[in-house]
Image (cartoon, rainbow, N blue to C red; front, side):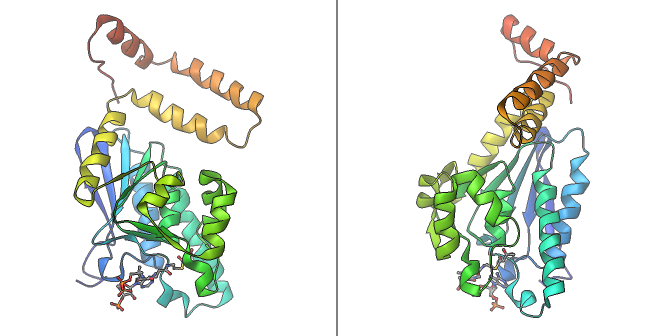
Length: 262
Ligand code: CAA
């Protein structure tokens, strides 16, 4: 299978508006070259506007999630090209982060460098017990260039993030769990189903409410607490202009399952 004959990023449809975005360059452990980054960006943009979309799962094909930015490609770059490459990486990661629905990283194997940075662009991170994660860039004379210097510390705190960035070490899934880098680990053969169960649970909730919750939690981060609470109040109020909370609350009181519309 060559790069020309298969899709570098596959979209796989499931029930309830759940979509898997699978990085598909297994012969290079899904390393991110410009073509893969463009494909991640384009696939994310393609699904972003879909009304039926409820959850996106990001994963890798073969034995890796993603083993990083493509080292062979970077070896040929001038500093101007490196700047463009980092910007392209940010565009791809930001397209994932900006999806209007929860995005789950199902880390099925190596998530290194740009691979961990891709996972860090997701909302919820889960891993196989076989996964290995890290930011090995300083060992290559580089720094994380697709968001790792910024997103890792925001997720697990700067103390632990500094250790991972400065040592360039690779950690096992149980250590990632201890650091709060992943929420849960699954045996390799149980990862797909475990993640799908969580995705289905989210997909069964009020779709407007889930999207609203993601937006408010994200937009509130750079605000001070009173601005953030004001944002929360405005958003809480806006939900009452739709049918969804009335269906949800009525169903609860009627002791039946809600029938939410997308
Ligand atoms: N770039 C390009 N090719 C890669 C790659 C990468 N990041 N990672 C793996 N590959 C390729 C290998 O070159 C190899 O290809 P060939 O068969 O053509 O030689 C193939 O994938 C399989 O890899 P290995 O034979 O090395 O597999 P392994 O099981 O022995 O080792 C590994 C697995 C420990 C993950 C090892 O492949 C590795 O260390 N990869 C590099 C990890 C890394 O340093 N990532 C960070 C990149 S820098 C970065 O990401 C910068 C940024 O933030 C923008």
